[in-house]
Length: 204
Ligand code: MD3
Ligand code: FE
Image (cartoon, rainbow, N blue to C red):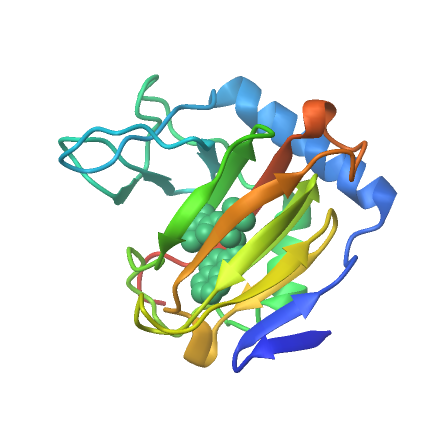
């Protein structure tokens, strides 16, 4: 385990190749039940380059009229989100260090040219709970800074099987994904990357 910043813990290669393959299979089943959608920015309606879906009781969505929010149903199908795979709940129990279970697993699907701009995860109402992030597929260049957008940033590569736990003083730090590195993993086709973030949304 590496402490990148106070409360920002990186567990390199936490998941074995076989465990990563099983996670990808579980996420494929989630995507069959809850198809990937393209979120859009509040007010402007500008599309994200990352496609998303969710599993668990709540899911994160965003569109021009409704803005960023958690809701119990898929924005296109209206169906409840599929259950969280047990392996994800196990990872939260092992690494999350928080008494109550996660309520949302946001699935981010990055095609080779997708990015995520610098932002803070602030839509959750349990600030004591960490965000647990699982990287699968292509290595990415991840950027993280401080509590202000203008604070100096550092960068770290996140590889397939790595888990980051973002809590404590780092929970509301700015972060984003600058780029993917092609040819770094055979786990997901076409140099794509999948990121899973487990979140506690309501007060425990
Ligand atoms: C560092 N996802 O979905 S996860 C997101 O790789 C998101 O897809 C990125 O940011 C991804 O909101 C990064 C890791 C992460 C999450 C929250 C953080 C890192 C963080 C909060 C503070 C600092
Ligand atoms: Fe984030």
